[in-house]
Amino acid sequence: MKNATLVSTYLVFALAATVVNLGSQMLSIACYTGLYAVPVSMIIGTAAGLLLKYILDKRYIFKVETKNLAHDGILFALYTGMGLITTAIFWSVEYAFHLIFSDDKMRYLGGALGLAIGYVLKYQLDKRYVFQQAAAK
Image (cartoon, rainbow, N blue to C red; front, side):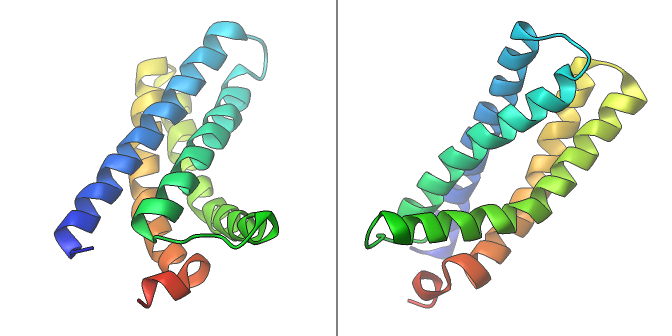
C-alpha cells in the first residue's frame, strides 16, 4: 500500500474506532449514571474501539492472515498490550478534560484528542512489535 493511501486508510479507521469508542461511552452514560459512570463508560468505549480497530488494522493496514484461533489470540494479546500504553494517554487526556471542565462535551473532546495522540503512537508500536513480519513486506 502506498504511503498516502496507508495514511488515509489508517486515518479513516482511527476515526471509525473513535466514533465507536465515544458512541459506546455515550450509550453507557445514557444507561448508567451512577457513581462510576465515567470510568465504566471509558472502559466500555475502549473495549469496543479496540476490537474494531484490531480487526481493521490486521486485515487492511498490515494485511495479516492468522493461521488459526490461537495465532489470532496471540496477535490480539500483543495488540492489546501495545494498546495499554496508548490507552493510558487517551484516558489521561479524557479524564483531565472531565475534571477541568465538568462537561460531557468537553470530556468527549478530550477523549477524541487523547485517541488521536494514541493512534499515532499505536501505529508505530504495532508496526514494530505486533505485525512486524507484515510491515517488513
